[in-house]
Structures are given as structure tokens and as C-alpha cells.
Image 1 (cartoon, helix red, strand yellow):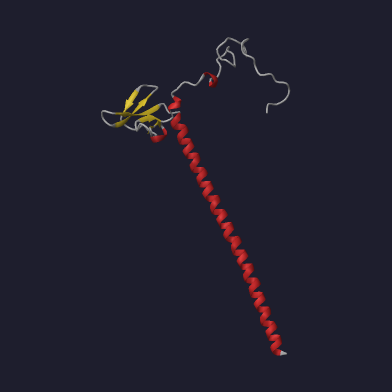
Image 2 (spheres, rainbow, N blue to C red):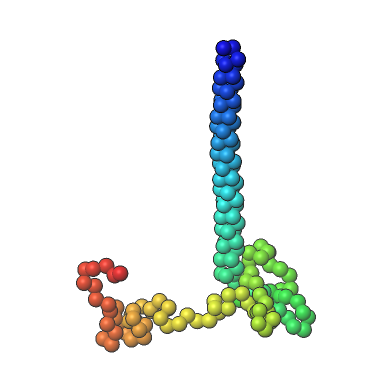
Length: 160
């Protein structure tokens, strides 16, 4: 009888060991999952901050009045302030935040100002109408729409 009780006892201990080990494994797996999730959140926050700083840099460069230009004869960059027409060989105060840089065209390998579309005038359809001009064609004199252009009718239903 004692051997039988001892065998049952050992079996019970083995079952408890196995179930405790499985519970500990599950806790450890959850711990690892939370740790990975926390690492991903930290990386995501860092990337978002970096993206915001890069976006702020690009916005400031797009609106800068100082342009970085390339001089072929000296083979060096110089800086032109478009508002005062002052030229300087030294980088402006404020570093790369204060001027519009030049980039190398991938086809011609020549230096061009970054965002060349900023120098082109907007097409007529993208321009804001001047005061007293038609909102549709932006050419004819009118309060809202000239007689040649028809504004879209609003029949009480929101557009799709």
C-alpha cells in the first residue's frame, strides 16, 4: 500500500510540476509579447518624431528666400537672397533650415533647385480667383460666376 501511495504521490508531483511549468511558460510568453509591443511603441514614437522634424525642415526649406546655387567656374555653391539680391559664399546663419538647397538631377546629373515646381506659376484652375472675377473660369468679371460659366447646382443632397 505504501508503494502505491508513493507512486500516486510522485505522479501528482509530476503533474503539478508540468502544470506549473506550463503556467510559467505562458507568463513568460506574455512578458515577451508585452516587451516586444513596448519596443515597437518606442520605435514608432521615435520614427514619428523624426518624421515631424524632417517635415519641418522641408517646409522651412521650401519657404526660404535664400537659394543655394552652383557656380560652374569655381565649382562651389553660393547663396543668393532673392528678396535683397545679396550673394554670399558663406552658408547663411541658421544652417540648412534657412535656405532652399540644390539637388542633383538624376538624368542630367546637373544641380537644380529643390522643388522646381515652386518656381513655376500655378495653372489657371489651381489659382485662387481675383476679387471680382468668375470663380469657375477666373477670367470674366463676375461676383461668383459669369454668364458663360454655370456653377454646379445644389439640390439639397450632399455630393458623393
